[in-house]
Amino acid sequence: MAAVTLTWTDLLNELNRDAAREQPQDVIQWGADWFQSRLKRDRVTTNGGGKRAAPGSLGPFSQGGGDVPPHALSPFSETGPADSPLGAGVGGARRATIASGSTLFTVPFGGPATGSSAPPREASPFGGDNVQFNASPFGQPPTGDDVAHEEPQIPSYALGRRTSVSAESLVPANHRSLPPTGALESTLEEDESTPNPSATPMPVFPKSPEQLARIRAAIKPNFLFANLDEEQEADQGAAGDYFYVVESGKLDVFVKKEGQVFDEAKGDNPKLGKKVATCIEGSSFGELALMHNAPRAASIISITPCTLWALDRVSFRTILLDHTSRKRRLYETFLSEVPILTSLQPQERAKIADVLESRTFAPGQDVIKEGDAGEEFFLIESGNAVAIKKDASGNEAVVKQLTKGDYFGELALINRQTRAATVRAAGPEKLRVAALGEQAFTRLLGPVKDIMARSVGERYGFAALR
Ligand SMILES: Nc1ncnc2c1ncn2[C@@H]1O[C@@H]2COP(=O)(O)O[C@H]2[C@H]1O
Image 1: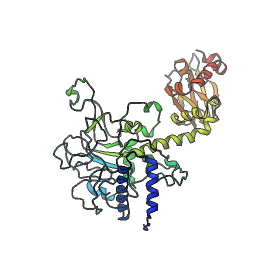
Image 2: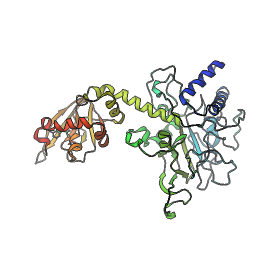
Image 3: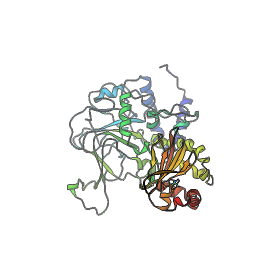
């Protein structure tokens, strides 16, 4: 890679851009951290790929494997799972090439809670009294026999960690000047990008196809990559720096409250609280803190060696924003052309766009079946469908033709009855529908719901009035 000379002005411009984005409250601390982080990134980049990130820099790293007892989560534990997405042991870490800082990295968890030579570290991403996860993923590097990193040892003071809680101004990845590489989702999926030269590109770690396959498998059932309903966000929160996805291993989640009665047979831990959940492969945790800037509400302890992927707060929030903005753009035109929604304001339609979920059906496939319970409302994005009802002897008759811009599935939600008809993809092309859950239907379609209710008679005749 050709060396690029960085001028003082370039550096200050970069600093200013990042400061404007992060809006730190403790500017001196933030500035000190920024320069350290920048220096390390520069050293890693200019030293070439194939080395592990310097201590304190954002980077994928992994440690040697081995049998370890149940332990508190510590990114700095000295033993770790051999099956890190980066490969077993530190060799895998050496494969990591760091282009410019990092966003997504494995954090090997697996060290014993006690007996580690690692000194106690600063604030836990989980905060609170019942802290178990008491080390910064940016803190000291793994020890062990890896001699690959030759970068100067620069002391880390809360390096890379947020020194204050602030409102970040984030630019969706699809508005960035570089391909949206740092965001987890964007790393995994193709994305069209609209250039915006003023935006700071997110950092990225190149990943091998095997690593990508493993991340894909781990996040497949993850909420972040499914539909994001506002309801899911209206929950009590916790402040933290990272969102975690479990690639392998098992972790227990504990919540401590006043006056709890513990049942150790059920796994409760008097020190940490009641065991409320177990995280396994594909689970995720830590999102509430990032969404709401609140203290961590739970302690999470690995009960087997684990490999986690950690996504930093800014990238996490950028993904959410990106996801939202992409969905809004995707549905903006379509929703503005749906006749039943024309009475809504553009912002109201944007909110609907946020929670829609697209599905496709081959000709002949049923979207909903007469007599089933109804939990969703549908808009036809493209293709054709027919509503079919059975007579007393079980013969089917088409009662309505539906096409692009039409809606169906409202009756069961309005009347709180089972589905009044079967709706089937009619062809010739695939049917594409946008589904809206019942809660969102009620919350976001209030006035429209009334219009629909009033037009039932006219729309379906007596057939719909059961
Ligand atoms: N004649 C009809 N009778 C009942 N439902 C119909 C008819 N034509 C279209 N439909 C749609 O088919 C849907 C089946 O599920 P729902 O009862 O929720 O809502 C129904 C209507 O949206």
